[in-house]
Length: 218
Ligand SMILES: Cc1cc2nc3c(=O)[nH]c(=O)nc-3n(C[C@H](O)[C@H](O)[C@H](O)COP(=O)(O)O)c2cc1C
Picture (tube, rainbow, N blue to C red):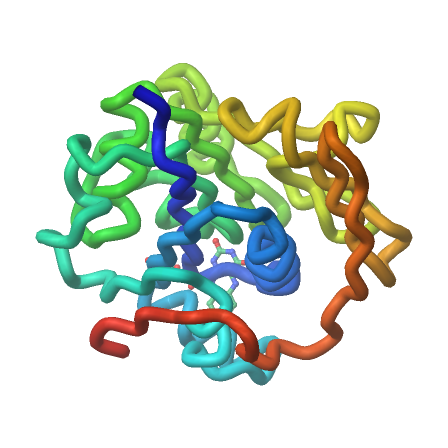
């Protein structure tokens, strides 16, 4: 039985929100892929303070939206099959929780379940300089099976679904089908085995053209 094309995307309270916005906008272009979004309260605060973006505008980029306090949501259970999860940006707090299995909100629970089910979990940690607790948490998370993907790519697309030539992480189940290449910042190119589709990048979070099931905006 094939795994449903569902990807859990978690946003926590760290700088680097442009990476998350880029990822969500890019994932929308993958046919048949459902994005399941969880934002912590910290993420909502950083969105407003650092990129002047209302959380609802980000929610409109996802297919399914959950409250971070809803520990009974679908993504809290391993029986809800997904391709895995990306946490971007991943705060030092969330990193530590994931590393040590502390599942106290829906994002950390979903990450825990992703590891438990041995599905791909990509963490994009954002803190600088990195103190020893965060460095140790990264090692611990990596030992538990997470991929640590620093937000270091020059065109802001450091993670998941990259073209192999960009040495990023290629998502099992979505590769070698759809793969993403950074397009010099101005465009994202969605390449598929059967052909390439070029789409203009969206500079703003407009939330148009996508059905968001925004359950309970906290
Ligand atoms: C504007 C702003 C920027 C922040 N940037 C970072 C950051 O880059 N990295 C980080 O680890 N924490 C950062 N924090 C602190 C976290 O948001 C805070 O530790 C929070 O408890 C994280 O909780 P969460 O992981 O549940 O979202 C920032 C907080 C604010 C208000």
